[in-house]
Every structure is written in C-alpha cells, then in structure tokens.
Amino acid sequence: MTTREEHQTLREMLGSLALGHLTAAETDRVRAHLDGCAECRAELAEVASVVPLLDRVDPSTFASPVSPPADLGARIRAAVAAEPPRADDLAARRAARHARPGRTRTRLAVAAAAVLVVGVGVGGVVGRTTAPPEPAAAPGPYEPITLEEVGAGDLDVDEAGLVPHTWGVELAMDGAGFTEGAVYRAAFRDERGVWQPAGRFVGTGAAGMSCSLQSGVLREDVQEVVVRDEQGRTVLRSSL
Image (cartoon, rainbow, N blue to C red; front, side, top):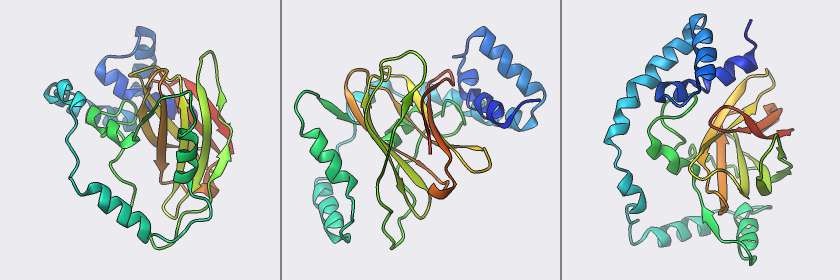
C-alpha cells in the first residue's frame, strides 16, 4: 500500500510525466501508481490538458520583460510608509545582507515562475502573483531556521526563516548553487502528516537569489519543510 508521503511524491511527478521529463524507471513507477489511484489519474488528465499551451509561450519575451508603470516605485514607497512599524522587518534584514561585498545577487520572485504555465508536480499554474490580501493584523516575527542539505550537492543557503501570517506561513530563503534553469518545489508537512505545496522557484546557478515561498498551512500546524528537485528528490530539509 502506498503511504501518504509516497503518494505525495508520486503526485508531484505528474507534471514531469505529462511533459515527458521522467526516466523510464520513474515513468513505470508513476504509471503503476496511476493504475490504482483515481485521484492522480484525474489530476494527470488536468495537467496534460494544458501541456499544448506551452507551444504558445515565446521564450524570447523572457529576456525583455514588460516595463513596469512609471509611478510603480512611488506607489510601493507610499504603501510601505503607510504600514505600521514591525518588530522584525525581514526586508531590512535582507537589504543589510545584500549590501555585503563579494556576491552579486539576483532577486527571484517565486511567482514569476508562473510563465512556465504548467506546474511540474501538482499541476496548474506555477506559483502565484500575489499573496492573499493581508488583514489588518501584521504577520508574526521572522523565525530563523536551519535548512539541512540532503545528499550530494553544493547548495549555499545564507539564511532561511519562517514568517507566520494569519492566512498561512511563508518560507523566506536566500542562497545559491541551485542548478540554473531547474525548477525546485517546496512543501510543508502539517500535523496530519500531509505535504502541503508551498510554491516553486527556478535555480540561478552560482548567482545568489532570494525566495519567498508561501503556503496556506498555519505555522502552528507545520512540522517539517522540504525543498525537492525536478525528480522529486529532497535537497533541503528542516524539522520544525
């Protein structure tokens, strides 16, 4: 019988199956699971239905993103100035780290990966463009955590932490060494042992990046967080 964790791992491989990115052994493993899982068969059908849309994506547009409105900076500054002070300002912490010499950083918004159209794993659109509307209550304090590297690799996580919100939890992570162009997925394990997806990001190789990965599971229900590669292998883990 497939355990819940095995089921989640196989479920997250459905996107790769639809795109033809799995090895023969991985394909056989997922196909065997599909024979006895109606839920995953239905999800694969949904994912496969949007694969043809990838042909409509023009890769040349990635190098020339749409220019933001001229007043966007002023609007952002006005919105930030209107917010009440916070005990632990994560943005200020990152700004201080980014001012250090020795590393060129690339800001990476996880939601920007939505241009991939198909989520390699759970299916649907990769990431999301915004977090849910924040209620009047400010998020809780930033909680530093240690992400342990699993297996062989050369990942460099400068800092990682959790930010609890009223609508869920956010994993903030700064690091480098993730394979350039590869899609990585984060997930939180809740108190029931169910893995809840927390978004995806694209590796930038040796260039540094900052990610904000979000999930609807509440911080008090989170037991573990992992980051998996395109093959579903865990590369980072932290028990909480």
